Every structure is written in C-alpha cells, then in structure tokens.
Length: 362
Length: 116
Image 1 (cartoon, rainbow over the protein chains, first blue to last red):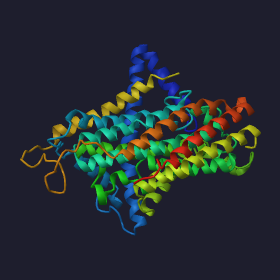
Image 2: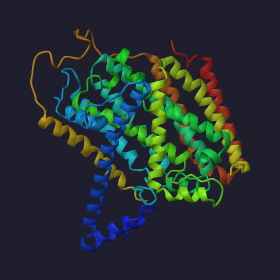
Image 3: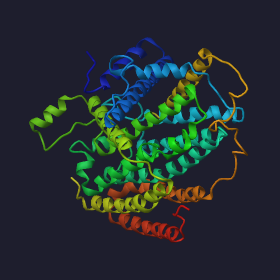
C-alpha cells in the first residue's frame, strides 16, 4: 500500500503516475488541479465549521456558560445550521452603495486567504507549493486582505463601515511591520525563505528553543502583532460592537457577510500556521536530546497531527487572549506598535544577527 | 518552481465566493419594500455624505508605514544572506538601523506618533 501517514510523497506520486498512465499530460494536470482545488475548498469549509464552533465553546467556557447546546450533540451542528441560515438570507445591498466595489470586496478578502493557505506545508510531502521565497510570499499575500476590507467599508456608504474600515487599515498596516520583522529575525537564523528548508533547519530543535532570548521575544511580538493584524482579540476595534455596530461589514448580510467572517478565521489559521513553521518546527515532532525513548514516542505521532496540533494550540491561545483582555483604544493601539513593538523589534533583529554571527545558537 | 499553483489558488478562491454568492442569490427569498435598502444607521435616516475627507492622523501613519515597509523589503535579502556574509552584514545593518532609528526619533519628537 502506497499510503503512509508519515510521508505523503508516495501517495501523491502514486496518484500522479496513475493519472498520467491513463490520461494525456494536459488532462492529468487538469484532474490534479481539480483534486487540489477540491481539497482546499473542503479544508476551508471544515476549518470554518470547526473554528467557529471552537470559538463559541471556548468563549462559553471562559464566561462560565454552556455555549451552543441544542443543535446536535453538544451543539456540534450549530455552525452548519448557521451557514444554512446565512445561505437562505436575502442578499441585501443598500441603495447608495457602490455596487461593483461592494460585491468585489468579499472576493478580494477570500481569495487572499486562499492564496496564502495554499503555501502552507501540512505534512511531509503534503505541501502544494514550495516556493523558494515561501515566507515572503505569505507575508505579501496576507497583506492584500486589507484592500478588501477598505473597499468593503468604503463601498457600503455607511458611516460605521467607513470608520471601521479606516481604523482597520491603519491597524493592519501598522502591525504588519512588526509581523514581518518578527518573521525576519527567524529568517536571519535559517538563511532561507523556502518553507521546507526552514522546517528542515529545525530537525534538531525548534527555533523557539534554539534561538535563545531573541527568538522568544520575536515569538511574543509575532503573536501580539499577528492578533492585531487579524483584527481580533483585544485589538478588534475595527468592529467594536459597542461603538461601531459591526465595523466594516455593517451593511453586509447573508453569504457575503459569511465570507468576511470565514476569511477572518482562515487568516487566523494561516497566522498560526506561519507561527508553527517558524517557531515550532512545522510538522516536525518535539525532540529533546539525541536518540532517547521520548523522541521515539514523539516520532510515532504522524507529522500531520503535529502540524495541526501546533496550529490549534496557537489558535486556542489567541482565543484565550480575545476573551480575557479588554479592548484597546485607537491611540493606545498605535502607541503600542510605534513606540514599543517597532523599536523593540529592530533591536531584537540586531541582537539576533549578533547571535547568528557568533554562532551562539544550537 | 511550481508557481503556477498561485493561479489555481486564485481560481479556487474566486470559485468559492462566486459559487456561494450565486447559490445564495438563487435559493434565497426576495421581497421589496421602501425602507429595506436604506443605509443602516440605528433607525434614523443618515445625514450628509459619507464619502468625505477623513481624519489626517490615519494618513500620517500610512506614510510612516510606507517608509518602514520599504525598509522591511530591504531587510529580507539581508536576512537571507546574513549568516554567509558575517561581520560586514552586521555592521551594514547597524548603520542602516541607526539611520532608520533617527528617522523614527524625528517622527516621535515631531509628535507624529501621537493621536489627538
């Protein structure tokens, strides 16, 4: 049997050979693309269902509630019911809205999420696109989403939307700097932007442990700035319910709203994925020392579970932040970025470069 | 490199949104009344235009972002080559960061980072 949960290379090659034996090269490509596309769509749909359910249950636990309990066992099919409800809602657009841009915005937000999601390595051999500039590609693509948000807010022709969109724009572009600089401080150590190589440099330990204090600082900055870039948690002032109804998507309803919502959760997944790749060794298992029984037990767990486990650990951490901390004001938000995180980040990169130069990492 | 997959991801994203929107359009009920398409503003009609000139503070931060984002783009190739080049690269980035730091300090002293 070619299927091996520890290494998907055999499986993908088997599919490729089987297809090219019976089909022409052009048709093989089409079928393969269709398979990958269907896989991505399934992943996005499943992630949406799981993450929204998780968010509700986590917030319920933190606030000592039960959360959804009525639809299905422990309310597990609540999200499915909600998706159906959104699908059956009338697609509304206000009379004054800019019709073309209003409809374009969900496309941009969702497509940006898809473009970044495809570059993640899910397991050994289960990596759709391994560019030699992988990390740069992900940073570039994830910053496209803000255009969709700005467009949506502007085209709605609603004051709440406009304020939300402009706030969101200022916030996302500010915190993008810190995210990229935190990523760069790990790139200094890896010496490569290719995702598979970054993971391979962590065979003998994750960068979070190997990179001394600067890696730890970079990880903390990455998490804070990443959450802010997602418009989440304590930084959700673009959609602050108590002042802006729903921020940039006030006028969106039905399925268009669902896409904004889904893109937010997919972006959270992508951010956690990038964090897992850079700091927590991607799909590599946790190892301590060389060749002991602990490492063998860890090796027994397949890479795909490691990767998703790390991602969901980071996502739970983000949800914990969101439901614990009070929301910041816009002046506090910009102060945090420009007066604390950015100078700290620049110093941190210098420190990291010094350590890399002296060879003080393991 | 297999960069053609970017096109595939792009198409998948478009397909998902277009499919969802068309499906929602086809199966959802439709009705029309006078107030349905009004702009939402807590139940009262909105006053004045929405597409107005906005607070300048946001644009200041956008300009600052532009400076530092270009700088980040410069650091990317440096970070990749850092370990190979060694001391020279370290000194160079030190000078670069000092110049940048002066820029940030200048903006700070000019109160460009304040929010009023």
